[in-house]
Length: 420
Ligand SMILES: Cc1cc2nc3c(=O)[nH]c(=O)nc-3n(C[C@H](O)[C@H](O)[C@H](O)COP(=O)(O)OP(=O)(O)OC[C@H]3O[C@@H](n4cnc5c(N)ncnc54)[C@H](O)[C@@H]3O)c2cc1C
Image (cartoon, rainbow, N blue to C red):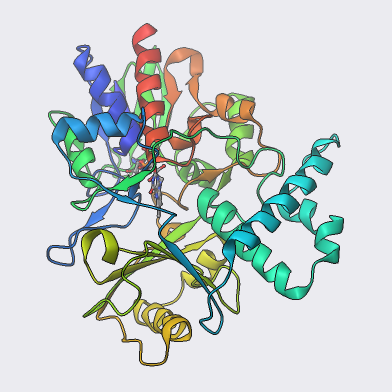
């Protein structure tokens, strides 16, 4: 049995299969395991997660169980500890903005739901009478909310996400926690004892005899009875792996229809905490919605003089070509507008560029226009008469786009293979 991809889905599947006595080899393209779980140790004593940071919803979350099993320290951030500033640094009443935006979005969706065709959230919103009546300032606030609660959450631009189904996922309750020691602890735990080959990018998979032949980019061919593909949706969309026989039409259509979104992180380290130390979230309703709008501070929970800026969707894509130094400069300028011209410059920066990552081509999947709950079902599961199967965050209809969704999808795939 071959598992392709050593992210949470691949590792969880391989672990469950190996525990049942199945001989499993995991093939991973990168020179490291973890995929979109990636803890950087560039800053001594300050592990920074460049992929996932949080267990979203701790109650009943399978990641909580794993973290408990290894005694991994977790700290809670809270949306209740937040502040919001306008372009000139004045406090903004975001509760009003969120209530206004949520009402508008709900009304716009109701209209689309009554029709027989889906459309993007943005398209639904801009024709609504509430949007037509809103002034420039309110529209900017609504765009800010859309960026924070839709684009940063799901990774897709509001002009791409399905008005019908963009939020058709479930949540575990119980708040959010992150790992001050890095999310990679979970990966190391899952990987223990498994046969994993890193720097082994798969180029092609073909049916052969009653099983499959898996070709690596270097030309080597490995053979197995079954291959479980857990590479990101972005990799499948790009066609980076050649399938020797067409995939099921519904699966191929799902690959094309589900969107691959983008979220990037810009970690900034300072000599001291020069911002309010009692908040976790800082929102900036700046001159350009979506640019330097969403920040997390580590000061309250860890005491570290570290800020994290998020960019999603179109804004993230447009900033990826900038150098690290340019990003640090832009961040500094935004922070000066928020907190005053004497705000210090960061002493170090770490910037992600997930769209340019050749083994992901994006951050995580989202429900683009045309995606329904059935689309993700079509992506997951078996193909080629049971000798090929698929897992990964994009395959999980309930928890797509998350670390726990990836884990659950790997576990489900392992159970299905064992049942076969
Ligand atoms: C910036 C960012 C922030 C996030 N924040 C959170 C968060 O706070 N909480 C949360 O729950 N989720 C978060 N997520 C989502 C979460 O990280 C992912 O959903 C999850 O890690 C995906 O796991 P996976 O196993 O499906 O895919 P991956 O982790 O991507 O694993 C797939 C593996 O396949 C490998 N691969 C690709 N091509 C090939 C090939 N040709 N041959 C062999 N191997 C190949 C890749 O290198 C990768 O290791 C975030 C993601 C990003 C990018």
